[in-house]
Structures are given as structure tokens and as C-alpha cells.
Amino acid sequence: MAAFTSIALHYTSTPSLQHLVPSLEGTQYHNSCWLRVRSHKSIGQRLHSHNITRGLKIQSAATKEAKSPAEEEWKVKREKLLEKRVRSVEAKEALRLQKENNFVILDVRPEAEFKEAHPPDAINVQIYRLIKEWTAWDIARRAAFAFFGIFAGTEENPEFIKIVESKLDKSAKIIVACSSGGTMKPSQNLPEGQQSRSLIAAYLLVLNGFTNVFYLEGGLSAWFKEGLPTVSEE
Image 1 (cartoon, helix red, strand yellow):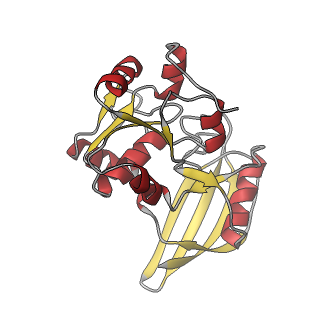
Image 2 (cartoon, rainbow, N blue to C red; image 1 turned 90 degrees about the vertical axis):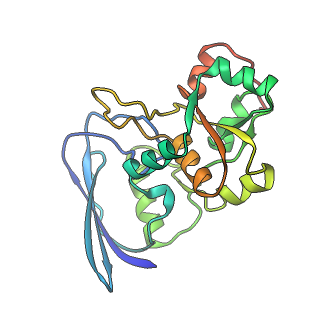
């Protein structure tokens, strides 16, 4: 169901952009503002507040589709991933599993990043893509990105699962990889771990019947840091 949405950005002074822009995983900002989103539906009203970054005020009316599975709360995603026994794999172990046990590395970064450098034989299906449409909602999102100097804002790729299904069987042994990897391991600062593109992708995969899903611990940053085999398409 579509919802009528109004957006306002105002100045404050803390956390990150990640809730609005999941593809900017793990990025922290020292100054921030907050985004207020009011969604009006025939069955009632809901008010959501999110932290972003400073000094911008946008008043906009837009129509946004109902929340997708990728936009589900991290707590809900984490519970499902734990239920489905999705586990992390370290970079060197991922390479061994790829070579010896027919594991597939599914790189969910944007295509441009994939072409710059990726593990040999990795498959690229981006979970976020450049914003394509020009609805009022999309224009507001572009403005929020541009405020941070980001002129190539991204949105969820609606064909992510369809493309993966065209390339891989649902019983395939998949190691999902993004830049930073995220984690489901609790810590003092992150009692529920930290969401990332690879964990969002893993969540979508298990929701759609994929049965052997893992994620790359430390992401491809760890792979490159370890000096593991890398290829480029540039």
C-alpha cells in the first residue's frame, strides 16, 4: 500500500545516515540532523524519527511505497538470521571454501565497486542501485544525499532476488559479501551487532528460500587487507 509522506530535516548534533541510506554501511558522522517522516494511511497514522546530518531543511510531500523486507528493523532481521543459522565466515576460510567446497561469493556492492576489485569468480548482484525515478519522494532523497556531497544516491534494487535466482540454485552455498560485512555478534557498544548490506542481503535470501547462506566476516575490506586473490574489470 502506498502512503502519503511528508519529510522535514532539521539540525541536531549526533549519529549517522545509515537508516535512511543503508548502503552507506558503518559510516559515522560527528554532526547530524534528524529526519521526521509522517505516514498517513486510511487505517491510522504513524510517526517515525531518524537521525541524519546537519543544517538542511526540506519540506516535501511524497508518495512512498509501504515498507519492504529490506527496510525491516534490524532486530527483526537479526532474529531471522539467527533462526536460519546464518553464520559468518572469515576471509581466508571463504577462499578455501570457494576453492574446495563449491561455495559462491555473492558480492552485493554496487557494480562500479565490484569492477574495481573483487574475489575471483565472485558474482555481483547489487542490493542497492542508483536512484532511477523522479517522484517527489525520490527528489527528496536525492536532496538529502546531495547535502552530504553524495550526488549518486542509491535505493534498494527491487530485482535483487530475481537476479540471484537466475544465477544460483536455492540450495547453493552462498557467502554474501559487501564492503564492511557487519556483524550479528553482540558487543558492549553494539548489543545487537551491526547491520550491513551483506546482512540485509542474507536476510532477503533466507526469506526467499535460500538454505545455505553465510556472510563474509569483516567484509571485502578484510579480504583485501589479507592480500587474498583479487581481480579487476577496469
